[in-house]
Image (cartoon, rainbow, N blue to C red; front, side, top):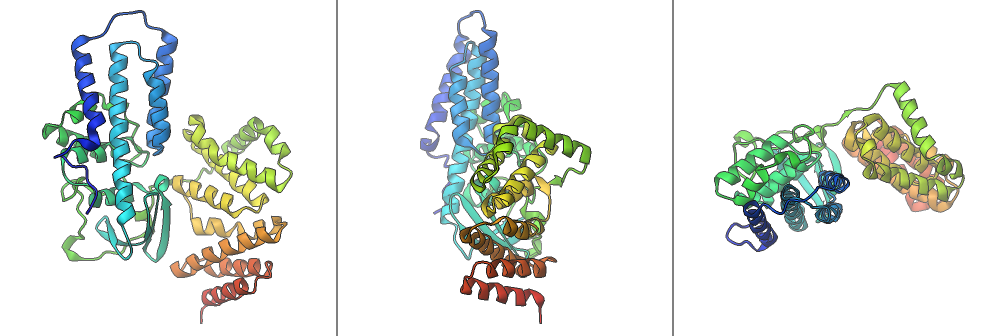
Length: 420
């Protein structure tokens, strides 16, 4: 049975009903007049901004933490209303991710999901991860990196067409960095017309929601079945070919202004000069690489500056190469891929030999070889132009491990890449 947000029971939304009553009471009473502490007001606005930012990044734990901070800074009736709306939005968005996670938990191979009316095969699915095979490639995501179009396709299966569902899906579309504000507002207006008071309350200050970053990549469009009206059936019963572009958010070209890139690199290395100077061992290089990966999540300045964001992730990748740590390198490249238009297989393939040059232990070389072998298999299966080169690098990496089974597997993939 599919998990749904049911309109015939308010249990999943009991906190929202309480909020609605509280807001209504506030509207009637108005609250006491008192001098406003401007410092406290600024702290309230900062906390609400952080709630908004965390929701856009799908970090509900952080959103709830800053919502509690905001509640402590309330002084006036207007403050109460702003925090109540924020709480309502957080509650619906939290419900959205929980229901979607439940659906992903029961989504099993060999089922399919439809994206823009095109089938993608489910390889593996859990509440926090999804692997699809389509367009001759394997696509793996965590909940945080799922493209907007994939999330919307899953929501078409997971939610009913009831008002509460529309508000929940609309919350995702409006606040998410990969959402579609216009489509989300339409769902909220539909729920309001159906008589759902929560939708009316949220529409009272829609500007609280995060800014829209463009339409959902591969997303549905209004006018069909499902909560978002997108429909899941291919037009005319056909089975169009799904392209890799349908399975990733619309990226932007990587920065190409070398002056700005150099300035950004100088800025980052200036701020973290002690850490860069101290990164002289494999352990310290890996530690700095992880810290650089975390920087964008902790800095709005970096997230709002494409060049700075790109450079930070490149520095994280380069530290991972120096540390011969394929996990750090992979995460950095995938983070770049989530924001910019890159060939991720090519980008990962370019790091194999440099990592091997940095590797100082058998374990490090083995980790690199296993990662390279998986990348080579992906490149061969998808017909990637770099398949032969990546397979050769994977075979070289395997040879440096003295692991006979690994060498045999890598040689087999290398031969497949070379062709008949």
